[in-house]
Length: 153
Image (cartoon, rainbow, N blue to C red; front, side):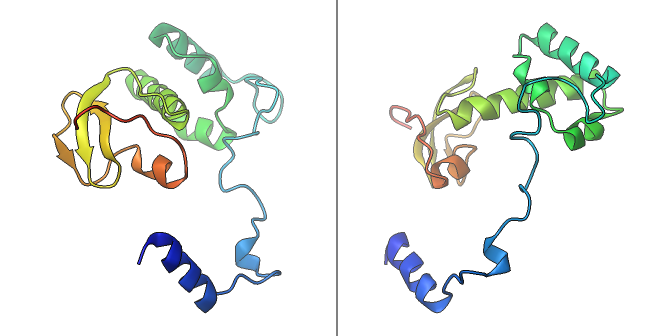
C-alpha cells in the first residue's frame, strides 16, 4: 500500500472535524516568519539591541547576508545571549544553509554524492558517509520541496 492509500485510510478512521481544536493553530508554531516583516533589526520595544549589532558584525565578517539577523525572532535572539562568537557564527551559517536548502540549492561544501535511504542520491558535505539513513534534505522532500539530485550517489 503506498502512502496516498494509507493516508486515505487514516482519514477514514480519524476524520478531520470542522471545529476540531487540534486542526487550528492559534498562533504560528515559531516566530521566524513575519516576526519582523519590514526587515528591521529591532527588538519589540523598537530599540536595536547590542546583541543584534554583534550578530550583524559576525554575519558581515562571515560573508553571510544581513537577512539572517533581520529574520531572527526575539526568542531566538534571547537564546543567543551569552553564547561564544564562534557559536553565534555557526548558528547564522546554519540558518543560511537552511535558507538555501529550502530553495533547493545545495549549501557551499555540499559536493559529495551520497545515497540517502529516504531521498536517494543527494549532495552532502565531504566527510559524510557514502550511505545514510536520513539526511538534511529528507524533511524538505517530505514537505514537498524540490531537492537537488546527485549524479551516482
